[in-house]
Image (cartoon, rainbow, N blue to C red; front, side, top):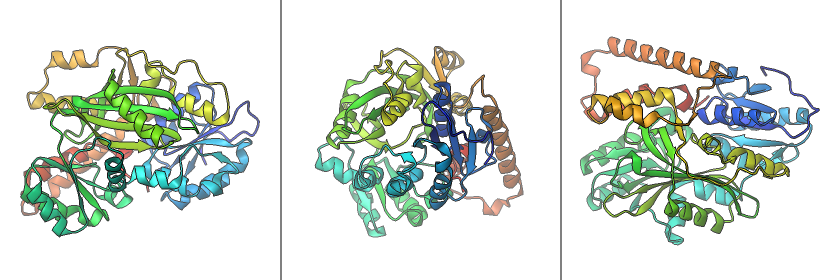
Amino acid sequence: MTGRKATVERQQPAAVVIGLDTMQGIQTARLLAERGVIVHGLAGNIRHGNVRTRACASVVATPGGGQAIIDALLELGPSLGERAVLFPCQDSAVTTISAHRDQLSPWYHVALPSHDLVTTLMDKVAFHGYAVEHELPVPTTHILRTRDDAVAAARALDFPCALKPAYRSGLWSENTTIKAFKIESSDELIERYDQVQSWSELLLVQQWIPGGEDKLFSVNAYFDAHGKPLATFVARKIRQWPPTTGQSSLGIECRNDDVLATALRLFTEANYHGLAYLEMKQDVDTGMHYIVEPNIGRPTGRSSIAEAGGVELLYTAYCDIVGLPLPEQREQSYGDVKWIHLRRDFQSALHAWRNGGLSLREWRRSVKGPKAYAMWSLRDPVPFLADLVQTAQALASKKERSRRLPVSSTTTDSTENASVQDQAETHLESRPQR
């Protein structure tokens, strides 16, 4: 354990952020600490720059995740006095916490629905079946259990399409940071399937929804134990990194009643409890919105845009869970606040500029206005600076490895080369923490 020691005497329960060594983790820790909550962090990579944040009273190393998380929580729990609130910040942590909730309940509040519902919403194959059954808008999807399924899908689908795992397991994350691969042809689908099929027990391929990244909308929300929404916030992407299927680097709050209505319908009808997120994409040809994916049980990368826009999303969750009066700021006013990951957005903007898709004037206009920052904080600058240093080191290491590679070993697949370059410039926060 590093940092200041846990203190038993306090005015209100503590919060424990699982996955401090992620973008979601550092944002959550800062937001709660700014509201007077004592925060403790769990980190798989104790050397990560986020561990040096000023927002946490203590940080516990949990190398390997899984059972290591449970063991660390059970050791930490008795020192916290009142039952603390858990904020897992990665899908794997949500699954682990859900499966062990009874073991953790003497020391912690766990805001999740039933484990069966957690499994359904987190597994893309199971969720697709649920969505079809409940007539929720999802794109045409084929489940790939075997190579024959991939061949059949290649014949049936129009292209482009997206190939993704049913669940982003540790094995998938060890091999790529890409959430989904954009596939341009039937031959490419078979080739990519052969490459990635061992990374996930099940794969699915979905019709690509036409439209740019600015047609991706999201709803961040919190639902109480009765499935009632206590806070919601709608936003859309402006840019992402890596391109095509990456994570948001710049987003802006917006109004989209169709997307909000779908999110409310999905989670309220499921009697959902906890933090929730739904991403949808608008088809530029038809105007219809289709579900890309839900994320459940944890803060997302853009959770902090809600607080910047006047909606106390995470603090509402905390107060409801521990039985404190809810904050007044829980209704979105639909202004123009933005969320930005400075390093990633610089990479995304530079890529767009090099390809003629963004001028300097357009870039300046896109980043103007009130903002929430993914990593930067004047009060807590070390994690941001460490992020820049670690990225520079990762790029230098990549260049050195590339310099040493013989020409004959270089792949001839230009699409693969582009993916590798994009992935290399993402960095520790998006990698699995062992």
